[in-house]
Amino acid sequence: MTENTYLLSSNNIATITNKSLAAAKKSNTNQNIQLYNDPLEKWPVRGLAYTNEIGAAISEIAPKTGVLLWIPALLYFGADIYDKYKNDQTSYDPSAKRGTKQAVFQLLASVILPTAAVKLGQKTASSVAAIAGKNKLSLQSQEELLKFTIEHLRQNRLRDYAENQDEYLTKFAEKLLNRIDETRKESKFKTSLKLVTDWLFNRHQPTAITHYTSDKITEFTQNNLKKIFELRKTLLEGRQPAEFSDNMFNKFRQFEHEFATSPNYTGNAKEDAAKQVIKLFQEKQIFKNKLLKTLGGFIALGFLAKPIDNFVENFVIHKVVNPGLTMLNSEQIKKFKEKTMLNKS
Image 1 (tube, rainbow, N blue to C red):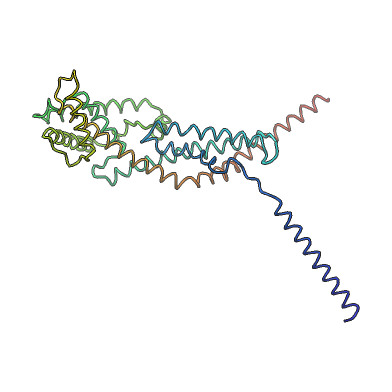
Image 2 (cartoon, rainbow, N blue to C red; image 1 turned 45 degrees about the vertical axis):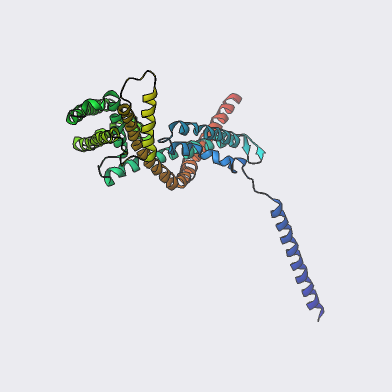
């Protein structure tokens, strides 16, 4: 081996050694650096951010619970906004710009748009029933008609019309048509914004029955009322209707026993028990419709949750909020400089 060859080999070895040492140092440095982990993004705390969405989805079947579930979510949103305003990850650096961005994000991505998505899913499920269902009425319109039926049952005794069901059907139809006419007139005085808001967020929607022809409504209500009279007759005969579960029939017996054993009761225990359990049966039909709407809300939320986050982050925040805040800051700086120069002069 010549001297030049030896020097070349020594230089190569030194170069390789230096590169190895640099790579090792860089590797050790990277291992020591830990990425910032937002404590509010860790589970189970992160789960609080979704309670309002669950609350909105179950509002149809459990309205009080749905409202209560908004409380932990709102507390989480407040804490998250304040945290982003106060801290720049690991350092204390209050920033109104950062806090504003987070407030806008939470308002849109966690409150307004997910709630609207849930309600849209519920309305879609309700409308699908009008297309695929036997009676061609939406779930919401069926619900309003069943509520009206229950109200009518409370005000009238079925036994008074047992031998003349047509009279009951006629009186019911007259009152229902009056209700529909009144609802139509009232809706004319509502603004477009109020109508849209009610459609999206109001659980009680009497205007739903105004969207269908009287023929469809009459067919649905008369079939339902005839079924009610059949249920009453079967119960008075002491038999379990085919539409009743064992639990529902046991409810009838329980009501009958409670009426019969009540000290000051003077009515017909079986008759009143039948009326009571028939109202429960109608309420159960309403609950089934609400379950279908709730399912539609969860499905819509599952499909739209990620696109909502992406839309708010990539479009609203980056293309609208950030430029707006930057422009605002620039204007403020410009005005401050102009004011300072005027004072000096």
